[in-house]
Amino acid sequence: MNIGHVIKILRIHRKMTQEQVALEADMATSNVSRIEKGQRQPSQKVLQKLAIALDTKPSILYAASEHSPEDIVNFLQQEDDKEKHAGNPIDLHFTYEARMMLSLFNELTPNNKSLLLEQLKTLHRWQTKMDQ
Image (cartoon, rainbow, N blue to C red; front, side, top):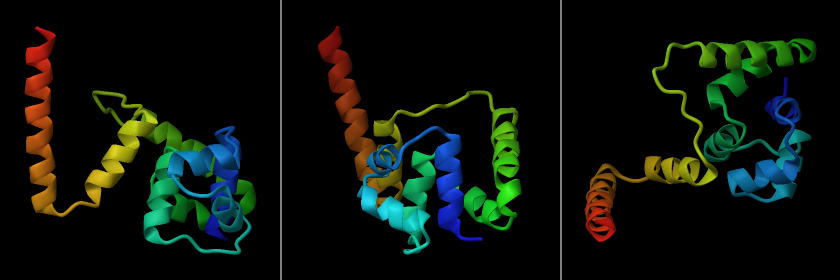
């Protein structure tokens, strides 16, 4: 099964347009269309962005691509249910900005991650003082 087909099925299941997915993934709508049609294979980086936009994981997309077209929706629904009932103490639903920040943060080197965290802490302390 083509991973683009899985992306399309999940997008439709999530009631999203190609434009919405493209905006969330910070890519062109034409790229989403080509991927869904199987005209282009997504790189790991693009697949990660699409997975975030569709509120899933790349591993789920790959696993779904191993199922028959009729079973993909059921498989994805089961995976959604597992995530909801995983016993996580906090149910996190990130905004687009938060997901983008996490995605960019994960691409940084360890040294740059440390530097950014220190800058955020300093900014937070400064903001807290200004709010008082």
